[in-house]
Image 1 (tube, one colour):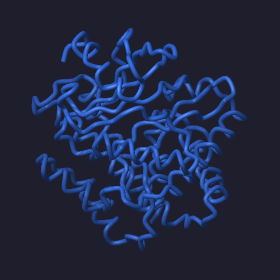
Image 2: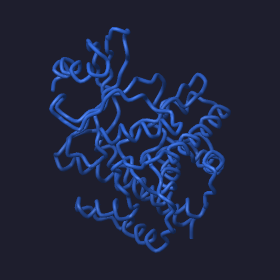
Image 3: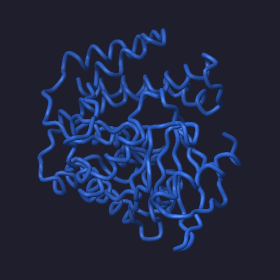
Image 4: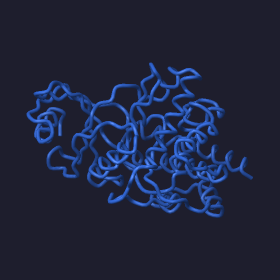
Length: 324
């Protein structure tokens, strides 16, 4: 749909929830390499309500929109700060693709801006809030949700073969991980992409106001979310002493999580998961490059992400040398 067609179609999907609606000021939002995001206002009888529309193709590999909305609602019930869901649907008939509409949450989501805006004290407080948010996600009740159960090795590495990518470093690291794989812990609801860039921060306080981008939600190991937050890509140039999202140390983040979740985290197991998460990021870089190079979706952004696979090789070799 064109923006004008989309704006004209939105009232029909909103009216069952909000009553008569007029769509105002529909604008594409930058960011996001897998789904499209729009911001708009809905004029209702109660006043103007600012909303966000997220859309993705019906054949994408991520969780469907309705399932994502259900998982967000479960996380909200457990105390996770999230946008309120208005409506979600797997059907493409109304808007051309499956969609999810939620409330707009004010604040900053661009990680470099957040990290520049907060000082050491503010960063430490945000780190506590991020740890508490992850703990709340893991407390969420996944019962009755048709969530995939992800395997950290079997579900990622084969994607390289499917793309025809041959990478000696990735192959060696995959074997290293397989030989040292830790025992699984009890399954929890896993966000799947909890990191700086997928949270909204009120930098004036500072305060975490919402966790975003739930398309990778699944059931799995709590270590996955913890490790993903701590890989180098998501500290945006900050030193290793601020290895947890660029906000503070990994040890502080883990200690905060332990306090909020009431569990003990094995540091050796976490290190294994950080290696695995770094490999996962390298595979994602290759996948984004493949989307561009194959002609499936020509994009400078995807090509730029693809070039970061070489950075990931360096990170992996460094991590394994330190673990030896």
